[in-house]
Structure formats: C-alpha cells, structure tokens
Length: 240
Image (cartoon, rainbow, N blue to C red; front, top):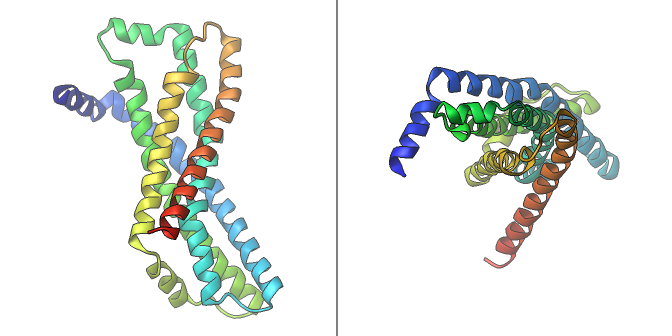
C-alpha cells in the first residue's frame, strides 16, 4: 500500500501528470475566479443594501460579523462549488466519457499505466487546490465589496483599517474548516464522476446526456453534503 502511494506521488510530479495538473488548476481555478468574484460582490452588495434598508443604519460590527459568519461557514464554500460543478464537472464528465468511448482508458491499461493515477489523481488534486483558492477569493471579494458599497451609500471613503480588522476577526478554526470542506467536496465530486458518471458509455450521444445529468447529480451531492454539515454544526453548537 505504501509503495503504491509512493508511485502515485512520483507519477503525479512527473511531466505528463504535472501538465494535466497545471491545466486543471488553470481551468478550475483561474478561469472561474472572475465568476466567483462577481458572485461574491453581488451577494455582499445585496446584503449591505438590504441591511441598510431594513435598519436604516450603516454597516455596523453586528452586520460585519453576520456577513463574515455567513460567508466563512456557508457561501464561500457553496457558491464556488456550484461554479465548479457548472464548469469543471461538465468538462470532466465529457472528457473522461469520451476517453472511455474512444478506448483511451483501455490503451493506458495495456501500457501498464493506472488510469486513476494518470487521469483522476491530477484532476482531484487540482480541483481541491482550486476550490481552496476560490474559497479565499470569495471571502476577500465579499468583504471588500460590502465595505465598498457601504462607503458608497454613506458617501464616505473606504476604511481600509476596518477591512483589515474584519479579516482579523475571522476565527482560524472556521477558516480551516471552510478550506477543508472546499477541498473535500471537490475531491468527492471528482471521485464520483470517475466511479459513477463516466462508466458504461459506448457512444458519443451518451456522452452529452451523461454530462448534463451528471452535473445535476453532483450538485445534488453538494447540497446534501452541505445540509448534513449545517445540521451537524448546529447540533454541536447547541449541545456542546
């Protein structure tokens, strides 16, 4: 078992797998960052405007704490996760299904190459890293956008010290849990795609159907996992 893991790591840092890894990080992380930034800015702006419309007050410490809690424990995982499903999972299902239809997986096996190590492991690592980065990107964009909109509405300059202080109030354990959740959900999605969604396809029309239905199923898994986590978090917080 240890030798097999060592061989997987050595193969991962080899040039072919490293190329796949870098491409997947670029596709799943970099190219998705703009969508995540815009989504975070829109959500944070709506939060600030709704808060000020209801209370008639500016963005106080209570509202900041609520936005941080909402983002760190929920939205910063969920929104990038849905973007990941819509972009990366669709492409991954299509790509791996086509490889099965054209016999590329079988060719790798005949060459003595483990398809999981070559095709899935780089995608799994890249997806996990990209989701952790997008988690931080969403959090940063949400807080900066909230302060920017609040300052714009109030007609005052942006207070950089308040933004820095808001980041300092984020509990390290909450941040660590959010990063782990992001990476774990991405890894589960990739493994599910490999084991369930890309098997048994023998023709090209089946590939498009597999991609469309597979994305919906992976999103459902995301939602169920988040529901379970939120229930467990509430239970632990209520009954320590």
